[in-house]
Length: 611
Image (cartoon, rainbow, N blue to C red):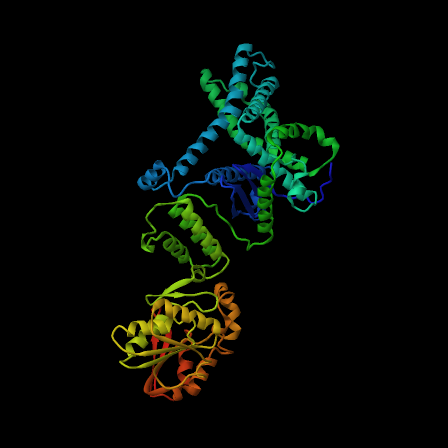
């Protein structure tokens, strides 16, 4: 037997056509659907060390881990069943469509709920009710002599019940082997064990290495269940000795129900003790402990099978994702692409955006633009198909990286015009529309307009497009960036407006004088750029942000030459930072008239200067 040199806390389980792995701070489920596509779902969980102190006490932690593992395992199993069978979104079954339209829920939600309730009921029936029922029948037939099988408080009685429980468990496993789909699940179970063993042996996680590892593992859930059944014999024997023979209401059926309910209450305690035993056995590899581990290994021979390379690939991906999430708090969560409710999807996206300090309204924009539904109607429940969900989640996961939403879509709306944007230009902000409003209000027939630092060309396009409705004007857009000018020219063609685009470092290549000059120059202080939101700092062009030490460099440069390029009575309209308007006015103190215009938030955003 190889010696384990890299023991890990990561565990897992097989799910429908895939594997779930669970670490300290994350869990990941990887499933291969019927189209052969691999899908992953990963989410954050609370690390053990961050749980409440009482939840970490010995024995108490066993109950906590048992419940958490049961819940997360069931969730992973049900989620995998939703995605494992690929759906045809182009032609959904009539039942699916009727339920979705009528009740605003998906058929898979109904099936999942029924399956969960049915599964819990079957488990209680098979492993708690039937063993007790069969033992009770034998005990009643044998009589109630003290210390004999018929004595419900005797060791023999509880050993017989435990024996029935183990027998039913083994027969249940053998029965499941008759079904191809469950045999496939046992193969994924083997892939899960092999992957964990490979890591613990200190080997690189490759398909070849994993394939050559053992499919048996000390922390297997099958072994845990056997320990639960063994411990239950001891615990229920003690309980039977204390209260079993004292429960006599005079009604046999009521006595039966009361004892059954008491054992049901004791089940978490049995699980807690079993957890500590499993934890202790897993820590040591001594041959002395092999007899204690052997029953679990034998059962694992039934519940694990040799996996295919494709199954191993799923297990490796799930394990690596959990490792990454435990090591990196920024490792993104992922969601299965599957049919789901609109409100559920929207809630999930908003929650995760909030955790990443991303504007929650971006979730509404993604849903609205992808589904073709107005944002105001997103509160109305509907079912999002698997195909729609795939498109939405692709955008959602890209947004989680910090990439601005409108770069992801490739365009945005500005003053009613579609403006293409990418990392070469700043994304036009709603507050800049105040500048456009002021320019349109001031422009007159035959005016010449110049837009400096045009970037995407949004300001120049909006002015030209609106003024052209009733006035004949000329508009020139200038920028120093070749990349920005390329985007601006594309937007001019897209919106079919009459705008001349020229390369110029402010006024450097500008000829003639203009009636109106607009500019939204870089105005962020150099030292403050690193404090900006990640999506601005890391994605938008620094050239369009950096306004120098105090953020006013470009205003000074414009002021130095403005008189050569503006006609008498002409107007300069500038956007500025929310705390810069007074400083900008000082820079342009030699003018005939100046005023400040506030944006919709009440912040001083635009400065109008008349010469």
